[in-house]
Amino acid sequence: MTAHGSAFPVAKLALNNSVPPILMASLRMALVFIFLIPFWKFKFPSKKFFKPLIFFSISMGVLVYVFMNLSLFYSSIITPIILGSQLAIPFGILASAFLLNENISKKKWILIFTSFVGIVIIFFDPKLAENYLGLFFAGLMALFFGLAQVYSRQLKELPISMINASTGVFGFVILIIISFFVEGDLNENIKQINLNSWILISYQAIVVSLCAHLLMFYLYKFYTVGQIFPFYSLFPIFGIILTYLIFSEVPSIMFILGGIIVISSVFFLHKIK
Image (cartoon, one colour):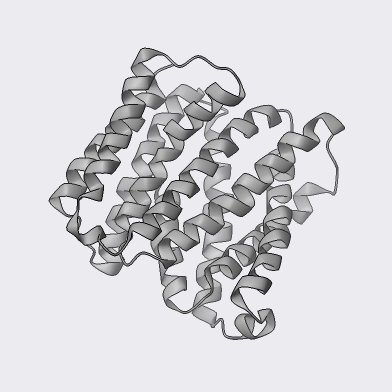
């Protein structure tokens, strides 16, 4: 959870070094794919997995990371973006209801409602006056992360390395094309990336996208999903602590109040079967 939480301040550091947000997301996915080549072995799944694998790869590898970087790029403060990512859980539950026809209990509806109430409270923080665009992109990031979790349920039989490699391929190819048309000359933009920024991008790819996920799947061998999932509520806490240590960003009273409501709601959403 520390690794997951660190993704946000680390990405902001790279963006502050003038790395274009879409290009950075593309390079991150390229590194993920390169490191997984030895484990993928270029095996392709059966046709029944093609559709959910493509949808998952585009949702996670393209939309989640590009909206994460855009939210940080267009926001001068990081903590609301970190907290906004927690909406992925209620979005995922809502998506499962619409796409998979799963029933949502009354308790879950109440917790989904309270999680959005917490976000609304945060919106009244005066510090957010010039950061609404960043929060909008954070909401889109959470939405597509929730959708990715729905698609991932249909991929349980596939090796994790294959899923991550597919995510890396789709993310890199699609985002590099978008970056070319939106952010300008690719060669010039890549040449301007200094060593420190490459280290930060590599950290996101190796530590966050690969190691953190592998550690979680390792835990699944010994514990149930219900035991592990509530710990996802911890990553915004670690992210906010790291943001304070790196950027000296102190949360306001409104943010703390809304944050407690959001994190508590998401925690109990994890606990309810």
